[in-house]
Length: 151
Image 1 (spheres, rainbow, N blue to C red):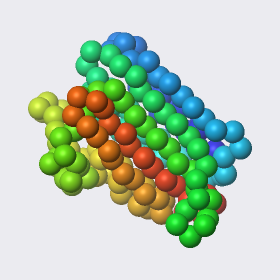
Image 2: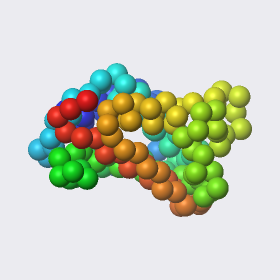
Image 3: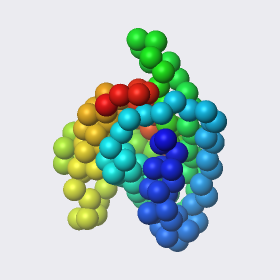
C-alpha cells in the first residue's frame, strides 16, 4: 500500500513543515489497488517532492497530497498521486529541463539538481509516469501514475 510510504516521507519532513508553517491537506481514496514497489525508493521520491515543495513556500502555504485510482493507457489499473503546493511556481522555460541531471532552480550550494532526476529514474524503474505542471506565482503540481500489481 502506497499511503503508509507517503506518510513516512511526510514524517521525515515534519519538522520543516512546522517550521515553515506549511499545512498538509491529504485526500486518500479508499480501496486503492496494491502497487508492487521498492518502498525505500518510493519514499525517496516523495521525500524529494515534499522537500522541493517546502523550499518553494518559504512563507508558508499548503502542501496537498491526493491519492486516487486511475486506469492506465492499456486499461490496467494504476494509482495516481498528485502532490501540489501553493509556492512560487516554476517558469515554463525551466519546466522543460526540470528532470535533467544537475539542473536546479535554486540558488543554494546545498542543491545539486539531482533530486528530480533521481525521482524520475525511480518512477521509470517502477514503469510509472511523472509530469510537472506549474504556474509562476500560483504553485506546482506533480502528477505520478504507478501501475498496480507489478514492477
